[in-house]
Length: 446
Image (tube, rainbow, N blue to C red; front, side, top):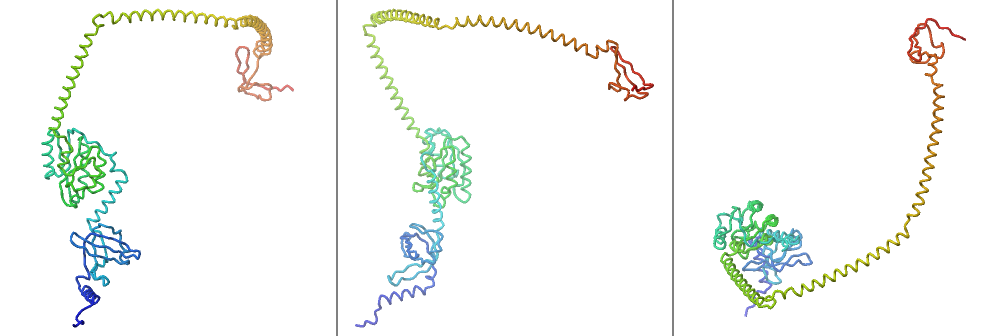
């Protein structure tokens, strides 16, 4: 038997590795898939598996490349990987050696969605306390959706079938695309001014990209800030968007949103019939009870002899009246006696005698004071007259009356001739009148 034609496992693995490494299509590959079994080793190398719905491939990213990642790889992330494919000799398994890993576009959206969902949840936006009550019998409903969509037609059909009394107002709105976010926000703000009882934000099913407008945080906050209750019905039953967490009520589909927003008129009719029946039954039972009560009262012996109803009460009233009069008289006597006793005590302690004594003394003092004031006034009057006469005798006017006069020059009194010269004008003042003179000659008498 010839053994030289058999290869060892190691030789076969090396050969296959050589083939892999020489294949230009395997030196640079671009693969998309979902991360699984992610493990960052203490050495810094990143180990993982990449899978899709059919296959799995093991992968490794060495420390030099893993240290450049701008995100933390985690289980379930959909990623785009560029690298090379080769065989690991120790295990004989082929694997991808990743040189760069990026989050898939949709994966990035999901990453942002999870961050927004966590932020809004921590701030309490999802709490039941913020949910506005849904009116039981709405009269006006605004639907924000594409006016030509099947979802709107289905909702209108549902409203006509379940509750034809409601008034509907459809705001034609972009439900997907780059401009849909601003359009939905604007229509929510406008709908909130229409004085509606309820707003329904709805669209039919589609891909995750088609529904992504309803995962935008700005749209969710616009729903939260509306004063009007909002029901969301976006996509299919399995689709749950960010606005569903924050709206006042989440419906699995647009049609379900219409069903949840209004009652079924047949149910209302049935409840009215049941209520009418219950009211009729209660009224009849009450009438029967009252009849029995009236019949019993009619047979009551006191009603047959009405005087029995008030005889005892009349006698009791008389007794109470007599007792009241007796108690009043007794109380009056006791209070009169007490009042007299108090009056007697007050008379004994009265200050009137002392007041009368001091009043008489005060009258005497007043008379003495009055006489003293009269005498002082007379004395002061005589002294004043004497001083007036003295002042009058010294008055310049009195001197002038005796024939004297005084002379002034330019308003100044002239006491000697030093300040007078010839041709000066001087004025002589008399008891009555004055004379203006011109100096002809000045003589100085030594």
